[in-house]
Amino acid sequence: MQKFSIAIHGGAGTLVKGMMTPKKEKAYKSALQDALNKGYTILKDGGSATKAVEQAVIVLENSHLFNAGKGAVFTAKETHEMDASIMCGKTLNAGAVSLISGIKNPISLAKDVMEKSEHVFLAGKGAMEFAKEHNYQLENEAYFYDELRHDQWLEIRDTDSFQLDHSVKKDSKFGTVGAVACDQNGNIAAATSTGGMTNKKYGRVGDSPMIGAGNYANNKTCAVSCTGSGEFFIRGVVAYDVSCLMEFKNLSVADASEEVIHKRILEIGGDGGLIAVDKNGNIAMPFNTEGMYRASKTSEGNEEILIYK
Ligand code: ASP
Image (cartoon, rainbow, N blue to C red; front, side, top):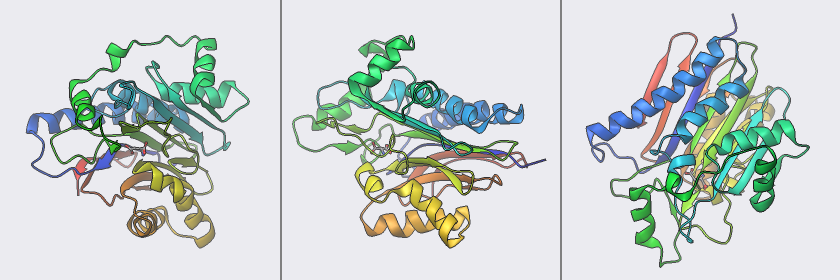
């Protein structure tokens, strides 16, 4: 049987051991476990990689612990603007949404853009119109309210700075979320969802919804979901760069991912990490920060749930 596997992440950043209480650490690991199980069961039952990554990301979006969906960070206007994207490595179909609000599961809207529209990327008002046409119910602001996230925002709201949710030194909550998977047919897919950066303004969009930057999948090479300083990941075209190193330089998924995270993105000043899988189910999860919430499981029985280096 073809090996199948899944990897997920909940954001990379200044995650230093001892910074979190054991209770919090347990909560994060348990949320990662739930998402991993959800995606893995779909693969085990013969479901597609695309479905597995969407469903795993939904579990993370529904947790207040991560910076996506329910736990999305606050913008400069004290609102939430979320971004998400998904790509199928078999068809190279992709869907993405940006600057949306009130949507409980942005990743499903991205998947609907991929499957139910002629387009790849819908943003702002138009994306919300599309959601309405497809009967999405809107959650009110209270659903997305989280005291810690609000405190993070209060600290910098009168400044010009905007902040990677997972780079604050203090005890805090982290993370853009993502998933990559390889199914029993050797098809791969990637999904990424985020609230972006705390105190962001001017309709700032990061790498997460940009196909090729924060998310990419191609059966020929790999499926990739990124997390980190979006501005750098956009300029580094990071997810596609990993794919290119595999396609044109014949690197393995592990070597290509390492090269991008530990060399190429560092050279331009970017920090963060990524998860990647190839069509043989091999997984890589490199990061150049202190830690990255991450987990993986393969049909060979290997399972990992990790936070620190
Ligand atoms: N890459 C995301 C962004 O720049 C942030 C993150 O990874 O948490 O929007």
